[in-house]
Image 1 (cartoon, rainbow, N blue to C red):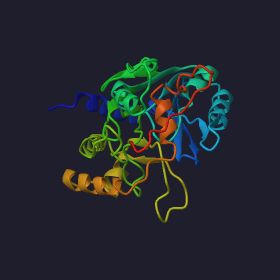
Image 2: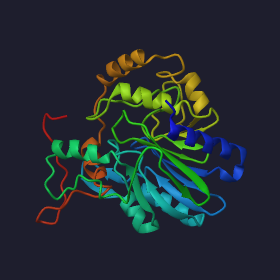
Image 3: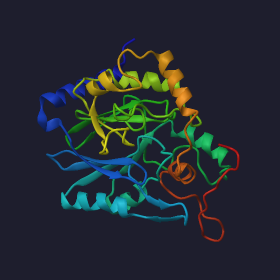
Amino acid sequence: MTDTSLNLAASQILNALANNELRPVVRTFFDQATFTASHVVHDPSTKSAAIIDSVLDYYPASGRTSFSSAQNIVSYVKENDLHVEWQLETHAHADHLSAAPWLQEQLGGKLGIGAQIITVQEVFGKIFNADTRFARDGSQFDKLFHDGDQFRIGNLNVTVLHVPGHTPADMAFVIGDAAFIGDTLFMPDYGTARADFPGGNATTLFRSIRRLLSLPGKTRVFLCHDYKAEGRDQFAWETTIEAERAHNIHVHDGITEENFVKMRTNRDATLNLPTLIMPSVQVNIRGGHMPEPDDNGTSYIKIPVNKL
């Protein structure tokens, strides 16, 4: 069966590789506290830009937030006279809070995420016993993307690929010759994302990864996280499809679906939950907004006991 969406993305990448004007400029901001790579992508000819997977600083001991990490992005955008058209989320993150609403106030841009966020909202709305003020229809976002959707950032073509498995809503944004793949793959020496969160599935993740790995080998791949594999001294967040195919320790060419699912399932069973999963999920399913305040005007993060 023909994968029309993937063919569109592959054609776009090949065109960008042949024409340097169709390749985006990418600047990455790495937040070591959450091991998150946020990316500012822009068209050099028009200076139109998108911000992908931003980070709001959150201090769990006090419940306070700050904008230091996001301010670095604001400074870069203004220094380079960029026009932000999009704030993009590859999925509803479980390890950091999104700064997208604050960045929208500072810089503008429509907020977009995968359409299956409504599934994630429904699942976690029940887990956190959210009240009726919490809409489970994705209305907190300006745009809900589906597989194969296309749009432009200036003169850059963008193709959206649905790559579930880590969560039901994961999306990859292929911008020119660059793919921003969220939590699917990590650097080749570190492997792949976990698939044990509610709604995750290791079989689905394997198939999504193999789909990504069928993109042209020269595709630049930008990751959402890095944890420095043993023996590596520096954080890294950029690789290529051909490097992942050849060297990814979990899913290189030749690894079968059965072997991957067994490895991923066994490995996930040994992992602790992310430190910030409770605040992150409750905020990120709301498009980066805090839960609705109680009658005293204060927002609260719930912690379900013995649930996750």
